[in-house]
Image 1: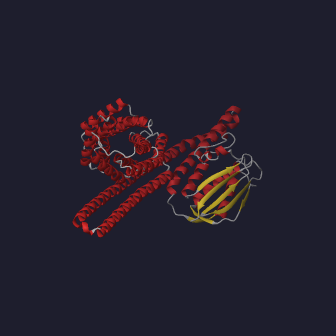
Image 2: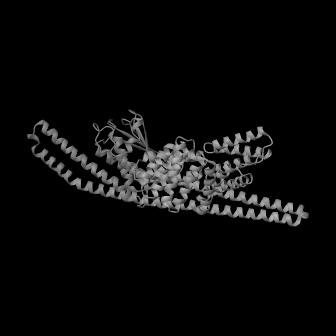
Image 3: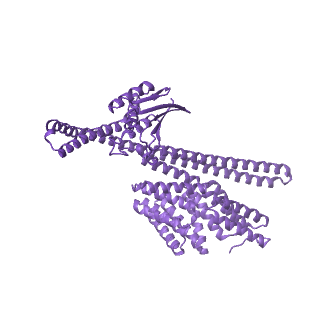
Length: 598
């Protein structure tokens, strides 16, 4: 039988229950609003002597803190609610308190204590026929059995829980249990079944408004796709980003750190190391926020303890006449405060250890992925080297014999045969150039660590431009150069870079006296060079695409391998710079190159 002190005002008591109900409804979707409603309920319940309203509000505050990853704060609220509920014999509330306190101990890996609270919660809920509550109690008992490697018992609890959840048709409960079955499958070594369970959990979670539940389901699905080596990176990144957004919306720092870690791992798989750096930095920031938050909570707790101690001392000094009795009360108070402080320090220590362990595991994973990527890239370089070397010989032979046939028998062949022979010669030449460019492209990475030298740009650019003008038989080409500084770089690579840029500027300019202008600007800490031509120009939608390998926009009118600008981008990146272009069709193009001003 449930007993509690009757409220003094029925209208006010209904207002308390309304605020608590709204807080309960908002606890997952709008935690700040839920907190405000619960505090309002507690304040009014205290005024009208309505302890059940206070206990319910405290419990909801604990759930809000739990959803934010603040286990120490959640435990404090749960214990306060439990004390009130035991005093007024609130059976339904006790079932909730026991279950949630069990969750805190479970998160601390104190499975013996968690088991005691979970069993008490289950027994109360069973006696009250609180089916929804019983679903979670059975699931939690399954969690303990799973952690203790009692697979048959864990499976039995989870199946009982799932049967009840499906019978009651509670989407959040089904999602919760399917997630637990996913963990069970994973522990049994069935990764495929684990993914199926988590995907089903996600589908039910999406039917709810529990953003924390959806966020955690999204993360688990991504992790299992990675374990099952399903490389659907676009979908995985979408899920992980959505998980991060949902976790941020609920203020769940623990889930945010996990999502940032997963996004960094996915970026490493893609080879996008800028994104790896971004998400790793975000992960470190979130860990620091978690540590800072725990530190602030510890400081607040110490300040509270100090304030209470001072208050107790002042009361003791003012009321010495009650002597020994008051002394005993103060001793109890101090002992309780000391015990709370010790418990808080244990929770903080555990939080720091968990954060450190996750960061260490992430660093190890990232190191393994980096080694795998380096090995794959080395294999690719070796393949390109062998392919270009082995293919060059037959291509040279084809070109040489075609040239010989053209010189010796060209006059005796009909027009069609001469045209075909010309195609063979041109094709062999183009293939040979393509293989040379491919070899250069793959060899560039090996020069990343070679020493930098100060390169005087003006004489180097004049030399490279003259060579390109001669090769393209444009002796009247004009080069205008502004004042240029010396920059730090790889001389040979810079010659290749500007050689390709000048080659493009002259190739795509049909004028008899093509003009190229090189300008310089110091932008912050970067040297910026611009190479402007008066060629045919490029449409805006192609201005990024042309830096990709094998991209050529006009294959019929102009010769080329489609690798020149890809090589340029690789060289600029090796100098830790960037390259881009601006162009208007019919009015020429301007290529911009930026290098750090070391």
